[in-house]
Length: 140
Image 1: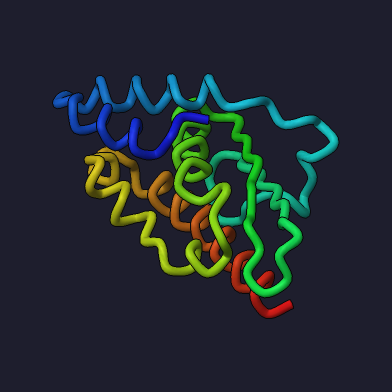
Image 2: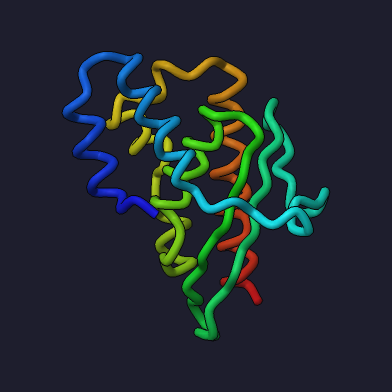
């Protein structure tokens, strides 16, 4: 997975929106493929126009577990957005996930303005799903 700092730096370097979208697609190509048996309705993110699946893994910490995520999409750009979302949240404590403003990060990278309304809604759905999972882990 590409580190978030590298993604932010690369987006800052790319001035043209087409270059940024090409970079997003490239990030998606690097995303490990999710096994078919994990592409279930339970793992599917609701609210995305494309098909998106997210799987959460919680570490052993009782009060504030570290969460890691696997993700997949059937659309190239959305798959890249999944890769960025995973770079933002995967490997973080649940409490930090709840505090992180991923949409602000996407805005600062200059990516929000280029997303269609459907893709932006799908991105919000992914972030909400991850934050909801973090909240569930903290409440457990």
